[in-house]
Length: 442
Image (cartoon, rainbow, N blue to C red):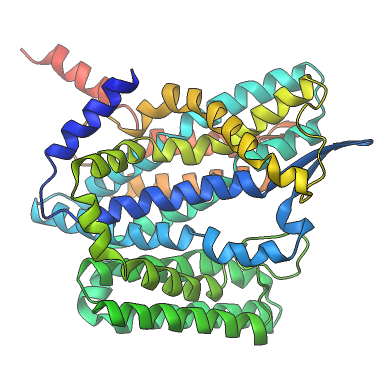
């Protein structure tokens, strides 16, 4: 099977047009891989005399906070998304397609892979609750496993605004990016400076939307030469460092419960300056990277990873929860080493290897949902996929925050919203529609 998959990747690689910017695909795959291995590295569960403690390396050691300047690569994912969505929307316009059809197609790629994850967790949570499993422990486990859907919900919302933000970019260029960036800074001022905390949630759109719009600049070759990109990177780094040194922002670029202010929940303007730092540095290497990816073997490997990248992103923490559960059944084997000790660091390669093995079955079983069949249905009215965006964001956001279940049982409303979105938005059902059409066609 592995040989088959590789041969398919090589076949696709050989058919790739020469003018395709393969570095976009490489950065998408690389950013998600960094997220996955970063999550696995930072997790530090340990069995103590009082039971399982869900430790996190960032809460145990302050020096690791600086690692998040490299490991927090969600800015790159949104940046690359801007490039890809600009190309996709412009191609849709050239073909005469509608916004409703375009958005439905994007949502099929983003939402359909989530549904099997929710089905598995719902069935598992129900069975565990019926068996008398501790609801609080189940809540914590599901919250940990569903961390990825939080960012996916934000990305879905940003994607829905692509035609509007891209039109602003086409008309006003850098001014449109500066304006939304300034608004993101003002949101921080209002939420942190004046204590209006709810205002900070606006930056899920303004801050991430600005990073997404930076991808338009890359798509339109508006980021200058290598030296200009290095200057962008240096400016981003210095600004981020200044915000951390003189502002209310912590060093860690991920959310930590131990800090009064977090950079990511809700997102702060520091993630925008971090995006400029990271993107500038990575794009300075675009030339050599594209030459490397012009070799069939390297490009085929990128295609292979991208073919299951969403599945890996969605299921990697579920695999970790399953591995921890298996360890508990074996009397905590492998989970009795104190985090950040010399022995703990020496065992990290084994921990990573075990997690790779644990996630492989999920990739094999659920990876097929990442590539839905071509949708031949008539274009829907725009309100239907937009309704799906709202319902999906609400459902996934609630699940990431509150988990699958608590002491009152399954969180039915939150669980039902993504499925309702798939139905109301016409996200699913393409294959069934095609079957009915073939059956009624003379």
